[in-house]
Length: 378
Image (cartoon, rainbow, N blue to C red; front, side, top):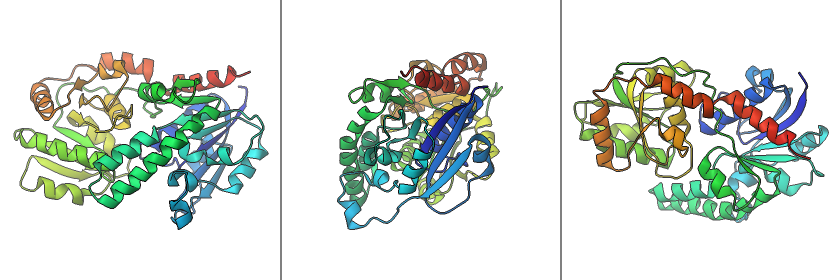
């Protein structure tokens, strides 16, 4: 198999792949390696650590760079978002220069080196994980403390300006139709390459599960708002259990569910990847919503591969074919009606899911699309 060299610059350490962004990075790395890419991986980290052997299986070299975390006054008044400004090291530039190969930047957060230095015509790709301006505007709207609202809004303004940098990349790889459409105002070389997720087969599930589940990172304001919304929904459905699952931060949920015996909280064990898989396999209903329009949420992808019925709002998925595998709901009454309708129905949609997900969300197929984009360059 012909070897093709590629740099990947990641905003975070992609192993273990325990949250949305790094899940996409890790399984993309794995899929590209499977196509014969010789990968030079560069990761920004919050503390000094050694690369896990799983990364070394798929990358020829792995370099870690300590991210700047302290917000001094210079960074507060920088025109660049803090998440971007804090991810720069001269050593990254030096290592990128050593190997002449295309560079794939994971998120705009990792791309400051491309603005600060000239790479002499080197081909560069940008993986667009989010429209970060939209994300921070949504966080500002969902935050309840005035200081957090102000901080998020400041980042929103900076990203709205910084997004114009998309035009300098030879290709922008959007992970949803929403981001693809929105990014076209900055670049005419935007491609839809769906999220990488690591699922190789749809779970063989049928019949009935035991409960409804909502899982998400409760550090995020949008997820907290969604959890509160769903708690209110299930207070109107006292005969059906809801499990809220997150990796910590149960102190936020527990006061909200006090006195409601059919609603419970469970900690997801990130050291045991099979824990979430078991929770999803035992669920009958996956109830999910977001108050931010941002394309594709990985929790919905995981539920489609690993669980039964999915009840979502339009902000969870924007691919119409994927939405067709779900029950759509927007208002509180919509969710109540959907739960009451599906809680007594046996699940029998495995074959249909296999067909649709194999067409849209196959990691190897989508890695081949990246290879084709690179090969199409003059």
